Each structure stands twice: as structure tokens, then as C-alpha cells.
Length: 428
Ligand SMILES: NC(=O)N[C@@H](CC(=O)O)C(=O)O
Ligand SMILES: [Zn+2]
Ligand SMILES: [Zn+2]
Image 1 (spheres, helix red, strand yellow):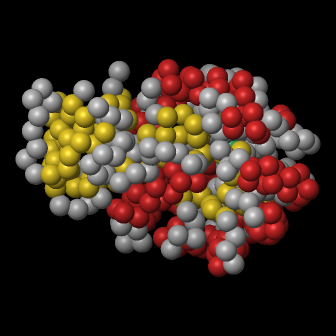
Image 2 (cartoon, helix red, strand yellow; image 1 turned 60 degrees about the vertical axis):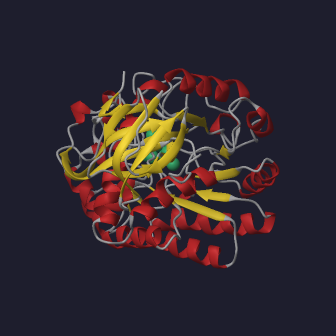
């Protein structure tokens, strides 16, 4: 299949045509043509490398009523993604070669994005003994990112051992940094507001203490550490310090932590309940600055679909988590690009290049240049879209952006030259 993309602004630069052929970018230039090619008009559109998510919950196997590999893949493609890392907290847990291969195959069958399974660090996410990390790395799924996400690997000796094993596999431990003894029953950010609302607090120190411990362990062992969903100003400071000392640590921030604050909890609407919790204005600004200066490496969605019965209840009994894939790029546009904190190359770096490098993905996060895999998206930066939960491709409806107008619209996404999204709609 051959496609010509007409007049796209690659990373926001001057308009150029892109010839996509046999899964690759065959040429970038002016007035390109090819017989029999499908022509896609990209006038006014920005071309970016296909986005890579380091943190997606697809819920299959086990909770296919909330999301499947296929519905989550479609949501990802609509958001401009060409690869997503599927978190291991499924049922059964992805803690064996068999389960990660199953998820990987389902992703191949759906064919909308590359679904890259994350392997659990410990058996059943129980934090007691290491899972079969080597077998998952050697499997068809080629696992390189290991995480007990949803749970913290709280035992420091076990965390040290995980880092040692994963180092030998050229992998990385992605830590959900939450000291469990400090967050028993926690519902929202700990502060004046939690006291006033009568909701048990989740102190910033519960995140920061684990990050501080883990960067010291990573340095000692000489292994790679990745920190999931960083949410506090103090965490950014610790990461900055660790990087200045040469520790091999990377970190991600979610779109919702870049935009929303704990003030959302005033509504008692559980759609705003998430782990780690929404924090303060000061935290939001530190996260934006940390992403802009590269202390935080990546935006990762933590797309966490939940069925209505698990989410639409009173705050304390609702599951934590919110959708993210379909709005992530728009939130980054609003919080970083429009205020002038990040340019288009910066967006490509934080949402594609660095996440691909952290996950050791070949073929993603590559430049839009001749010879490279044709994984890319076309964005209309001038569009403004009001988020309608009913219109989402996700099987769940727990978006925190309902009714909110956000900038930017993904018009097309290409996975190895094949359109997965065209005219803003999923290709059937
Ligand atoms: N982020 C959340 O609030 N929930 C996630 C788990 C997690 O990322 O910790 C989930 O699986 O629902
Ligand atoms: Zn988590
Ligand atoms: Zn998560």
C-alpha cells in the first residue's frame, strides 16, 4: 500500500509531502507523486512520530467489560499512539511468559498499535517473590519493562534483587512509588483540603520516600529505574538530584497530573479519584517545569478504564483511575505547547522518542525521515474539541475531561504505513 501525505508540517516545520511505501517513509520532499497512491491532504497539519505510551491498562485478560486489547488499541490509535505498554495488573496477572504472550498476540490480532506487554515484578503482584522475569524477557513478547503497578515493590531487598535481575536483561523496573504504610485508606492528596472534605490523606512523602530509596538502590546496583506517574514537586526535586549524580533513572508524568488539581475532589465525583491523587497547583507547575527541562522524561497516560459499577459509587468505595489515551496529546498541547514550555520537537521527544528508548522499542520514536518506519500521526493544532464521554472508543466512560474543551485533534495515525485513523475516525 502506498500513501502520499500532502503538505504536512513535520515537527511544525515547513510543509512537505511524505511518501509512505511498504511500511516505511520512502521520501520526504516537495510535489511527490506515485501512481495508484492514496492521497491524504495534510494542509495545516503537524506531523509527529507515532506516540508511545509507557503506561496503559488494557484490562484483558479478566475485565473485558472495562476494556479489551482491541478497544484500548483503538482508543490509543485515535490518540495518535502507535505503541502502548500494557500493564501487568490483569486477571490473571501478567507474571508468566504464557500471559504476556497472550496479551502480545491479542495486540497483533487487533493490529491497531503495537501492544507491548509489561511483566509483573513479583508473583501475583504480591510483593513476596520475583516472577519469572527471564522467561518473560525471552518470550515472543520480549518484555523489557517490569512493573507491579497498582502496587509498590515496597520491600527494599526485593526491589534490589529485581533491579539486579532486570539489569542483566537490559530491562527496567517501573516503580509505582507508594509507601503502603503511609497510605492506608488514602483517598486524596493530604493537606488542608483533605481535612476539610473528611477524606483520608495520601501524603506527598509516601511517594517521595520510595523514589529517594529507589534512586539510591539503582545507583548502588547500576541498574535502570523508571518512576511511574510522578505527582509531586518534591519528587521532581529528587529526580533532578539523582540525574545530576548520574543515576540511571527515568520518570513519567500523566496528562491528568499536568492539568488537574486536588480542587476537583470538592465535587466528590469519583471520576477524579486516582492513584497517585491529584495534587496542588504548585505540584502541577513543578511537573510542567520538570517535563519541560527533561527531568521528567515522558508523558505516560496511566489510562485506567473502570466499569460503571466500580466507578460510579461513593468516593471512598470507587476504584482509582481515569481514562487518558484519547486526550493525552490535547492536554499536553494545552499545558505545555500553548504556554510556550515545549515545542513540537519537545512533544515528539517526551511522547515518542524517550518512551520508545526507555521500553527498548525498535521502530518507534524514530525521526520522520526517508528509510524510517512509517509510524506517525497528523494533528490539527487549531481544532478545539469538547470531550464527549459517549463518543470515546474506550469501553469505559471514566474520563475526567467530560465537557471540557481541549485544543488539537488527531486527524490521522499510521502504523507501518497503514492508516489506523483517518479523518479523525478509526479505520475499520
Ligand atoms: N492509577 C490508578 O488509579 N489506577 C490504576 C493502577 C495504578 O496505576 O496504580 C488501575 O489499574 O486502575
Ligand atoms: Zn500506579
Ligand atoms: Zn497504572
